[in-house]
Length: 219
Image (cartoon, rainbow, N blue to C red):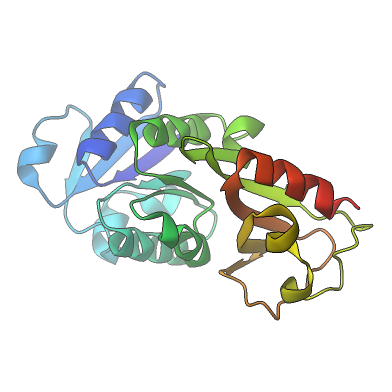
């Protein structure tokens, strides 16, 4: 499997350490020649948001890409460019500011995780073992705060309601930061957005709030 790692700062270096033993082919892209000289992995010096750089790194036949720069804006451009070049590639991204999580999902990322050492662990696990639900469905972002994916069953009382009328914040305290609907992702959905069966909410909240929401959507 070919994995492209964009960004070789502290987080990128941590991710590469964890990927190195996997036996996969890793290509590292970074603009800093000095950084790249410190790794024995295959490297490409250049702007990871640039089409030619990504093509030079072999994105056309890569299975996965990890955007791990220290800029959420740069990571968003990497996601957009990589998906436009290879629609089948699976893209994971580090996020530096939690409020940008929905934006990176909106740019097309398949998996977003906060910039921490734990984040490097999660994103590496997802890259190598995407079938493990632990890394698909729950991310601990700070002590008791989590970002979680919650499925809306067809029998839920919320189906057909607008978010504004769902009473999710009032009843649970959790906040919906995105909705995954089939192949579409809706970041920071409007309060007028209708809830549909089989929607997948991306929510943020304390563990107890997440538990309350899980019960609330199933009534």
